[in-house]
Length: 426
Image 1: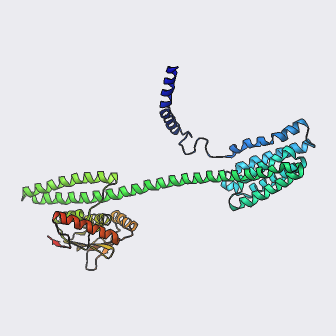
Image 2: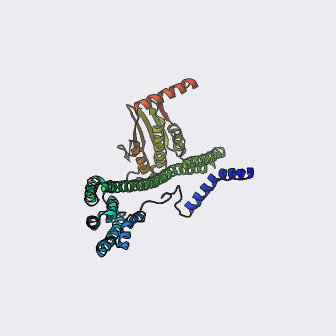
Image 3: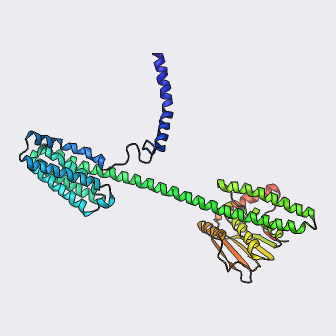
């Protein structure tokens, strides 16, 4: 006995694992086990309503025993009723067929046959009214359901009382209940199906959004990094015959940039990377100087919140990359202003500009990013020549105050004064 109890306890402990394994195997085979999209028995359909026809077995028994007057008429009526019932309940699960006029006429004919058989025979033939109510619940939906079901149940109750007295009044409740419950179950099933479809659509949208994010990040990261590598490689090639140490320093920078690019790409893949505005400004100075372009960086106003600074950092990265690639400029000015709930970034170069060409995917992606955050990005020829990129983002006052306090505390602890950055020109 003790051995049997031990075996039972071991079987019970291992049961959840076996059930989970069975569910996984069912899902792999496309089955409908618990946890699948369709549930244990799947959604209701026409076949789930066919067993209710067994309620007419009493009428069939009366026909077989010869207890029904005019059995030929009764048998014909029974055949017509069953045929109409099957047709209606199967058409009810197709939205287009359910709303078709032919389905409504079939339901009306079914009601006429039910009423005629009930008036003619009474007794067990009255049970066709709940079946009629069930079929009505599959077809009629919305606000019309209540009045239609109440009217049908009233007629069924009146005929039942007429044929079999007040004891048959339960036909009223049976008809009303069958129709209302059926309609409620089917409406709930349709709602669940719509929710599942919506969930799948949201999942597909999330995947597309993640792909778009990754493609933008990869474009910005690789475009900037490859531009830096090309510029520094050209600088190393130019100065190598004159100053080998300086050339080796450029090669070391190339190695550092490559390692940093690997780290950034890994972070972009995991979705945790955010561009730092201060870091991007420092990088812009270095890459512009290496490319022979004089950088002028100005920053004024209170510190920006991290999200705003990150977005502007992406704009700096992409814009500076475009300046190096396309502008042939001698000077590039970068100005950051934060005031009155609005952050503004302006990047201007004095090159020949790229305004005559179609904006690249980088600027297009940045425009969409800033628009999603309530900001704007404009690019085009500058009034005095060259090319200008202007980015604006809203900054909430509470967020700005919090950022200012955080930076002030950090500056006080480290002994660094936080204020307006003066012009930096090399």
